[in-house]
Amino acid sequence: MENLNEIIGKVTEFLKSEARTETIIGKPFKLGEYDCIPVMSVGLGFGGGMGEGKDKKTENNGTGAGGGVGIGMGPVGFLVAKGDEIQFVPTKTSQGLNAVFEKLPDLIEKLSDKFKKEKV
Image (cartoon, rainbow, N blue to C red; front, side):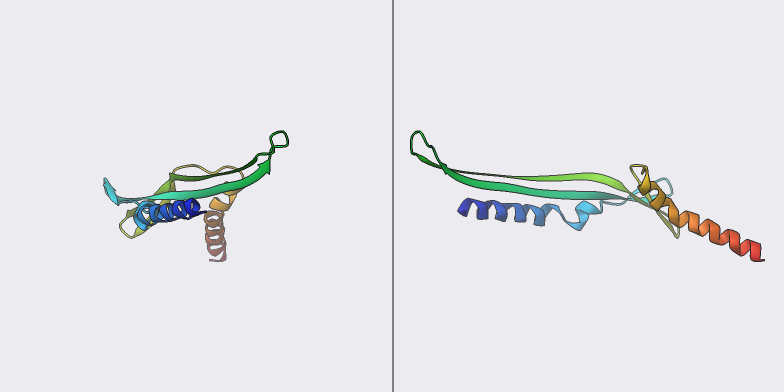
């Protein structure tokens, strides 16, 4: 159990040093007249287990334990600004239901503009 506490302490220290705002929101850079800020996704997973048993043939007892930690990072997209306009540009295009939800705000705005024009 002492090893488990030591491992958890080391993982916690790693997260404190690596999973900061600067890791999620990258350093801004210029691309022509656009200001760009990369946005990252960070995922973390833990797993572990313990067990003990008795060998029926030799009558010996045994114990075992194991664990694992995984961390993944990847680009989600970019915040892109030009003047007063800011837009999020994803690195992956969505498919299926996600694509519908992403396009819904634009669709509502277009319908709203259409109804406003019809009333005039």
